[in-house]
Image 1 (spheres, helix red, strand yellow):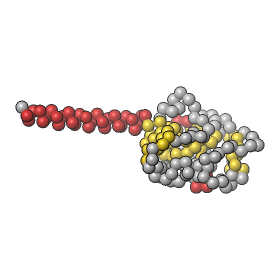
Image 2 (tube, helix red, strand yellow):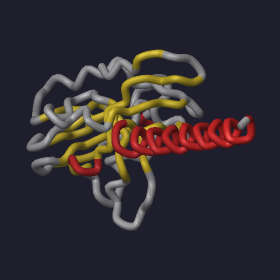
Image 3 (spheres, rainbow, N blue to C red):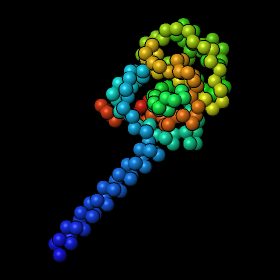
Image 4 (cartoon, rainbow, N blue to C red):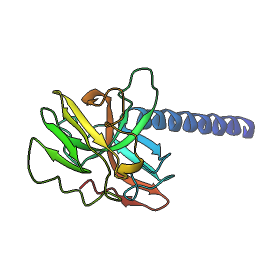
Length: 178
């Protein structure tokens, strides 16, 4: 009798472990993106080795907005890599970077970007962003490989894996996208 009870407990334990593995698989592959940040391209907003979670369904009912922080698959062909960047340019816009300042659609006032680590150097563009595509950059502009340097400068909406929502290591906090 006791042997049968032990057997049932072991079977229940194995079932619990299998269910936990299946639930974890579903959550991490279909609901969230869990990422460890490998570089300083988003400093000081998100630091190297921070661990963050992005929500995959963020853009199911809405469109990505300027200044959202996103995790994306590389827009470059034959590159199996994920990036964490900030959306700067939206579909249909023309973006110019003059003396390190971002200008949208020939606006004479540069984009307000209080989150950048230090003043960006250089001139880039103009970039005319196609429909359903975005132009992204890191907050640490002088040390970020992003839309300015990629073979394919624009990120298609289907390459966006999710919107970053919170950091859970080394501290827990909500990621402020603006």
